[in-house]
Length: 298
Image (cartoon, helix red, strand yellow):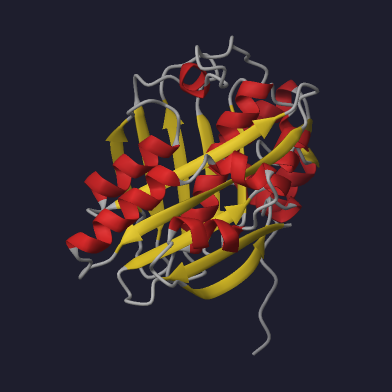
C-alpha cells in the first residue's frame, strides 16, 4: 500500500497533499506490462489522480482523468475514489520512445500534447457528473494538472509527479505532491512557497534518498510550520465484479446480446483496469433476463 498525507500551514494559507505511490505504480506495471515510458506516463497519471481523490470532500465522490494527446501510447485513463485509491489503463502499453535530450523518459512524446486533459467529477449529491477540459500543455501530466486547476477551478496549484524506472523495467520509486494556495494567502506566502519549490529536488530524487511524504512536505513548506491533517494508505484497487459485468452486458439490450449469442454463446469480458476475466453463457444470460422478478414479501 502507498502512504498519503495531507497537511496545512500554521496560518491556514497553504494546503499540501503528498503520496509515495511506488506500490501503486508497481501494481499498474504488473497488470499492464508497460514499457518504461508508459510506466512513467500511466504512473504519473495514477499518482495525480490519487492526490486529487484525497482532496475530495466526500469519500463517495469520484474523479476520472483522461489524457488524449494524439501520441503513440494512445489515451491514458486514471480513476480515483474519494479516499485516493486508484485504477487506470493506457491504450498501447508497450510503446517506447528514445529518451529526451536531458535523459528523461519522453512521457510527453508518448502521450502527445495535441489534445486535451478531461477531468470528470462524480459528486454524490449531483445527478450528473461535472466535466472540465483543458488543452494539454506538454503531455507530461503534472503541468497539465496544474493548468487544469488554474483554468477550470481557479485554484493556484503546484503539482509535481515522478516515476523512476530501472533498466529491467521495474519501478524504483514513484510519488508526487499537490500544493494549493487558499483564500487569504499573502504575497509573502506566495514568495516563500515559490522559493521553496524552486529549491527542492525532483520528487523521485527525494524518494530515492528515502524521504517520506511527511519529510517532503517539510521541505516544500519550509517556514510554514505545517501540521498533518491526515495520514492514510491508498492502493491500486479495481471495483469490477461478476455482478457489475453482468449488468453491463444486460444494458446492451436483447437485440445486441442475441447477435453476440448467435456468433458465439460463450462470452468472455476482460476488465481494462485489472485484467480480471469474467465468463458468461449468453443463452443463460438471456433466459435469466426473461425470468420474472421474485415477489417481494408483504
